[in-house]
Image 1 (spheres, helix red, strand yellow):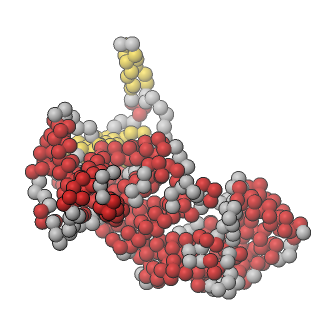
Image 2 (tube, helix red, strand yellow):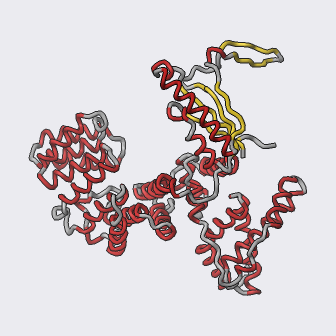
Image 3 (tube, chains in turn green, purple):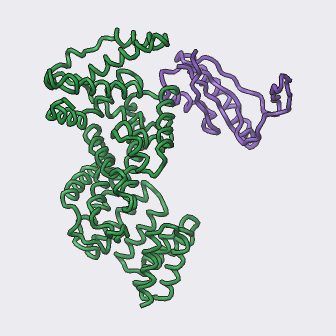
Length: 416
Length: 115
């Protein structure tokens, strides 16, 4: 390479900080994802060629947008020799007044990343497509990295992205932020995608961690971006929830990947900075009434984060928060978590009545974790044989290896 | 862009619906077409006779094959359509969500190919 390395490093730094924002604006200006991605690559190739001689422009972002757009118009003109429709698009683009010169110094380009997120997470796309497209365009992950993150073959993932882009173009999914009236439901879809990405990373088995991208980290970055661009209470709630859960990362599994229960985690390994930040976002999320589902889940995580030990946790407060969560998001799994909190507040016998009630219902009848919770309560009550039977029942209901290892270990402890 | 809103519903919904409700739904449906017309987005709309009246044609080896009824037996069947002009998919979906029969069945929104 004959390019001086400091400039290369500078271009690399600009790429890391600005490429997503430049891409988001190019999609708006060019009206097409693929065209915008090509334009982005062309703009950075031009930067590598020109910046060593001409220096780094005062406003690299505006420079890249302007160069990228011009490159796209050139490319369209070249292709127009074969396709007249592209010629008229090129003409339309080049005759549209572009305030590119005005951007030269201090004038700033609007941040288009929010509209990029809303388009990637449009409910007209399948959830799988929303996740893939968000990671590809908003986070800038390669198709290969996303595929390895979801343990899918790369061509499958690539096809998903191609189809999603084709649907955006053909069905006319607009590149815009939703109207105020639609914001709650559309934002819910975006948050759902972000939390799904977080959980995929959070629950990934550690064996493959070396080759898998840090999806939890990407999700937290997305959460921070959303909090900056759209500071809604539920956005703060989700960011708080992710930070508080991720603060336990170092303490939540053994070196072999076996999970460690909250109850048995070494709390000194929890990330204090993440907790501090998470508590602050949780406070902001809860300032709005009525509190949303992410805000309440964050508030529960915050109670755990603040407790010195598992036993000293404010279980009464946690039960109250689960009650509120059930109002916004009725779910048998939330009821099960509430029952466990009641057991901590009032003793295992009180919890057992609730868990037995839930197990009698259809929804949790064959849910391994419900039987494991029941077994745990029986164990604490000294009902050894009943506890053993319940652990066996749970073991018969789960295929997940970490859960099976855990349940077998509990059974072994009861034997001795 | 042009979008075709295909309205699907189970024909048996009419069996359990009291006549005044059926009448009201028809009035509401016609009124909605007029609303869309007034907004300048309406291109065409029609309701279809039930699938018992349908005949299917296929051409194989140059020969038309005529059969009774629709090809597949499904619960929800195409019962009508509205062709609209809309700025983008969001606008089209909003119009589709306003179709009275969407409360009873479903509306499939398809962009029209432009040549």
